[in-house]
Length: 317
Figure 1 (cartoon, rainbow, N blue to C red):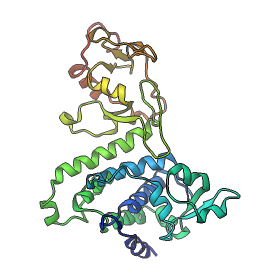
Figure 2 (figure 1 turned 90 degrees about the vertical axis):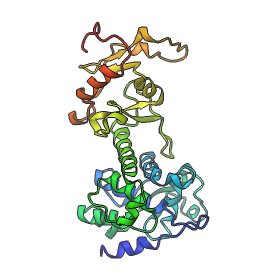
Figure 3 (figure 1 turned 180 degrees about the vertical axis):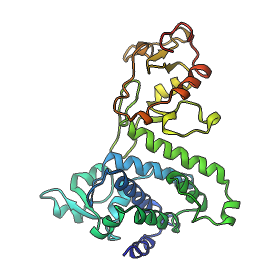
Figure 4 (figure 1 turned 180 degrees about the horizontal axis):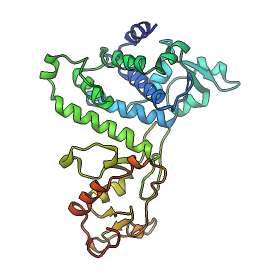
């Protein structure tokens, strides 16, 4: 039964505009496999949520260098029905609208489509680890991806051994750079959901139906120096506070208390809370498992090498 699905995957259509294999559908299928594995999808029902869209956008970064615009998750979610992989189910009373809707936006599809359903046999295979890995290998090894893209996907998924890239392809690709890019995408896809798509410092959360979010994954020990993409070396921060953290304007102490270099910069924030106002507050990490919380080892590096304030007079540092 498993052998049937790779054959069906191979029939996913070619992009008519660029005449290259279209990556949309396999990327969404990889995102769905991730959600089945994590327990975010526990039945054959697949809803077009902002969280699924966010994961799809992460995968889309693998093919971004082709020059396409930002990935649109509504396209594969809509068109996978024609491949027999997703079956759309309308909201009550809107069955007739299924025949006329078009994938203009996530919001439009969600007004009509309650959810999509995977075939029972496919979903059963997705819940089995070995079958799930075989599906990933079939998707990554298909003709939808260029050699450098397959390297990124393998790195994202932590797949040992490069089954889909031969020696000639490896020689013609800057493999190490691609691996780093893949791991960076994986880092972001892990960190941002762990923090609930919210900034650790200010709590701001903006997650659009398309999957776009205001929050970014910040490295504590600068990645260019550490090459460290462990979860404990990351935090989810809004763009303003990510920039301020990288500039050393604030850091976290041994008790996860916020330390702001208040005397080292000037700021005005007439319509919002200033950075200085967070000084001495403690961030809430109670929702995170201990092993996922920012490591004091990496915070110590940030305090010593990036923070521009005076630590000697700060309690709890």
